[in-house]
Image (cartoon, rainbow, N blue to C red):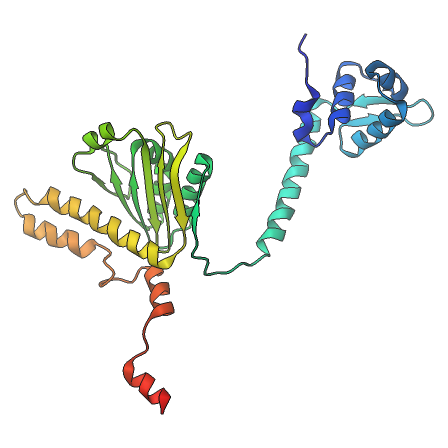
Amino acid sequence: MVRIDPETLRFLGLNKLEAEVYCFLLKSPSRTAYQIAKALGKPSANVYKVVDSLGRKGAAVASGGTGRKCRAIPVREFLGHVETDFKSRLQQAEEVLSSLKGDPHDETVYHIESPHLVMERALKMIARCRMIVVVDAFPEPLHRIAPALARVAAREIDVYLQAYRPIAIKGVNVVVAPGAEEVLRHWSCQQLNIVVDAAEHLLTIMNQDLSAVHQAIWSQSLYLSSIVHAGLMREHTLHRLRKAAPRSGALKEMKKILSETHFFHEEMVPGQVALMSRYHAEPADRRKDGDE
């Protein structure tokens, strides 16, 4: 016979005694509160209150009149009620929390300790990209974010990926880092670096099975994100140029590669636009006029 520990049911919103009574009623339907209390060795007054609370929580029903009998709601029906109630509460919480507006210019560098949160953050960043995402990823994290990269590329977002094993993702500009296999043999870890729109970045190094974070930082610092974007973009471009160099017609191909690259001096990426609007210097002649 399987023994059910009522403690395992507390996440359903039942306290310990409620869980005990519910489990008892599943095995012994149609019992009075007095019979339940006697069988469980609990005070009758407490069990009467529990029967009422189980009714309010959609876990049990009771007959009317004196000596009323109680019956547990079938498991699937009760779980369906819990799920519906949870979704409703979740939506309410989202509405309340979304109304709390924080500082729009939070440029703090945050450390992330949870592998799950790292991957969730990476996927959310990719999904909200408006113009360009640049990624440097080892095989394991890349496998998890590849579908998200394909989806954002399908929206005609520019996606630049530096991988460490050959991979094809529709719409994604992929380069395989030189000496990639040697790099993978050298490192007993997995790295994932992402910068989106030069406006936010995630830099991560985790263990091989992504069950632990060695170090991970995330920030919406415009300055730092712009620097990371510039670095990863140039590294991606350099690898493409090195690959093209030995080919015939290399000069033409290399010029094409350079023309496609999102360098800041040629094209305004959203993060750079925001950075410049915040810190740009007022023209000298305008400052002079204003001082007069």
